[in-house]
Amino acid sequence: MTVPLFSLRRRGDWGIGTIGAVAPFAAFVAKHGFSLVQILPPHELPPGEASPYGARTAFALDPIYLDVEALPELTKGSLEEALGPDGRDALAYLRRAERVDYTSVRACKERALTAAFAAFEKAPTERREAFAKFCEDERSWLDDHALYVASAALHRNGDWRTWLGKLRDREPAALAQLAVEQKAAVARASYEQFCLFEAWASMRAELAKLEVALMGDLPFIVGHASVDAWSRPREFNRARSLGAPPDGFSPEGQDWGLPSFDWAAMDATDLAWVRTRTRHAAKLYDCFRVDHVIGLFRQWTKGAGEKMGSFDPKTEPEQIARGRKVLSAMVDEAGAGRVIAEDLGVIPDWARKTLHDLRIPGYKVLPWEKDGRGFLREPKGFDPLSVATWSTHDTAPITQWWDDFTPQDRAAWAERAGGENLEARLRVLFEAGSNLCLVQVQELLGDRTRTNEPGTVGGHNWTNRLPLPIEGLLEHEALGEFLGRVRGHLLATKRTKA
Image (cartoon, one colour):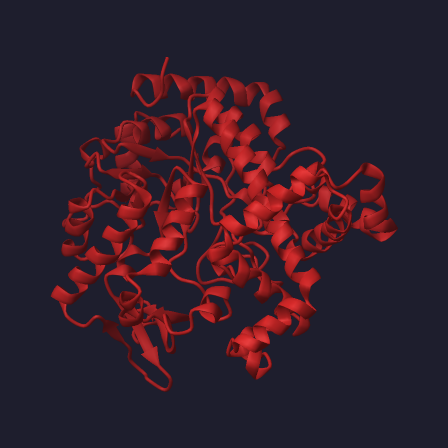
């Protein structure tokens, strides 16, 4: 079951899904035969950003996903005092909102976390000791993250490339001075991560009891303004911008405005950033999707003023070797069966062979699976080493997409499914030969809302919420009856246990 973390809704929440909502949602889907929940990246976003693929860190989680009312440092009275009358009005608005308002959510939770951190000084000794241990265990990324947050606040959350030279260039004396002068801000940033990872561990324990796995998502690369690009300037090439090669829609290719990997510098550290990030993901998730996996074989980059870009590496043998080296490192760090490749789009046969050799499954999006003559492939014949799905967060859910099919494709699918209704479409998916099938939550709820529309910018992207709170889903009789029939199809296709 695929659901963005921000989409989860509970009664009385603060206008966005939280880590604490994952377990109740997992209990709901487990009741109906599903055994895995997939979420989009939960990492900290910069102010004004909504896309989970635009995070300013590959490691830190976003405080907007905290259940602040559950923090032991806060009481109901202290929370109300921290919010104040205008904050309580904002919270009431957020609870009514149909979509996520990131700016308002962040402002409300910022007030709550300020009060919680102030109270943390009086926390029991064992809690402060647990915090100290967390800081020591996670210092490989946490120290840089906390310094970044403190410096960004001094520079009005500006891009680190605009900071004063000594901090921008990470001069040791300047960093040491920052750590002393902004001690409270550094500790506050670390405290927030302590609370987030504490909540995450509790959520994972609940999912384990439910026997529901958690699948995550690793964005391909970080942005120019990220903690990672600041703390590892040699490993991210800011002189060449990442993008996509020319195609029928973009004759000059695309420029994504992202740094590219400096593979030579990364090789000099034995891919330390890749390995550390993978180990971190393996702690967060049972398995995870690697976005834009072809970019680990070859990057399409442009230099300043260049009209056309080029591949790095340039030759096919070099590209095969690069992809195998990086993905092998990821499999080594994560463990067998935990890495899944997003291999959609134009993927050379040699890249798919490498993935198969490394036992990394790729994606099969049913409407896009066609043979050389343009005929739809039969899902029952999909390689078991694959993930089958009707849709992704970048497409419409099948509840909407079905209406956009050509009459020929819709008729072909209806014939295979034995009908055009949603239940029949799900049955076709469950019959796929793939070891894993994913269903967007919208497709079970009969919801036509899409999560993201690539190539567009606006409040319609990355803001969708469930039409009902999780409590309402459990109480909905018609939905329960429908999901009971869906569970029957899961049983018949051996996707779930009796």
